[in-house]
Length: 141
Image (tube, rainbow, N blue to C red; front, top):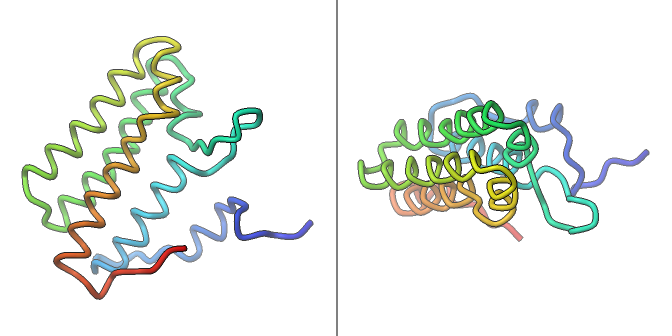
């Protein structure tokens, strides 16, 4: 079995994640977490990427709390980077809105396919890093 770049490999991801507090290390961690939470697998039939946020969210109530806790880690990293209170509030609002939607049976599961709070929060973090720490900018393609 060959390993392709598009295949999700948690062991490889864990081995390459930096543990430092410098902005470049934080950028790599939050990008990896967003990928795990929102785009780790392709949903057969719909051909849409989903991640642990969607899968764990299928468990009523408890799954949504776990997904919100995982998403809150992005907010924690943002706080440590020094994002403004307004940006942190927006990020918390994204996580909270996703969690509240998740408490509604079926609606929350469908919403996880379209409202990707972690992707939105990653964009907020990346804008901050691009502006305040331009050396961390990476080209993705």
